[in-house]
Amino acid sequence: MAVIKVIRNTYGGVEYIRNTCSYIIRSPYIKNYSAFGVCAFDPKRAAEQMVDVRRFFHKESGNPLFHVIIAFDDEIKNEKAAWNYIVNSALWFLPDYQVFFGMHGKDEECPHLHGHLVINSVSYKTGKMLNSGGVMQQFKIAAEKLFKCKCTLIFLDKKDS
Image 1 (cartoon, rainbow, N blue to C red):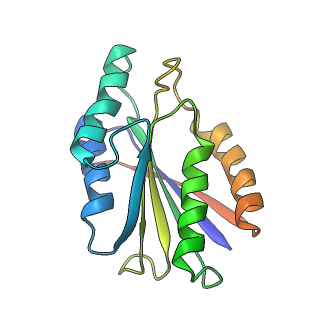
Image 2 (cartoon, rainbow, N blue to C red; image 1 turned 90 degrees about the vertical axis):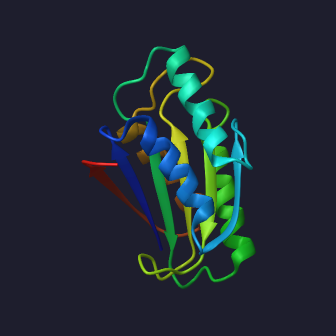
């Protein structure tokens, strides 16, 4: 079983993008990280690249990103296997959306290996906004096939950054 949490924050703006990308690699529980479509080694630059896309398409209001947390249960203990699932989850959003992602070990909030995906809500190819409901339901179905287990999809709306 895996739990997929999708955090939406329409109030955090640009700072929310920066903070979320930085959190991924600055956590003491970081195991690995990478990115597609943005700088993989500098979370500040990755966030700036996401903001640049939003500005280019004049889509600076609304939900700036989707913060997807994939928490595995005790069946997934192997870090290499978990990282493979996280990378393939990030790949699912290509070729249209920028993704900065990482894997954390067990921590106070999640007692299992888990991944964080920061997905720009604006396509860098078309400027189209990511529709969270329909797309995330499709992602859940793809994740169940990839992880070979049932997944629970939870949407969380944050009111602050």
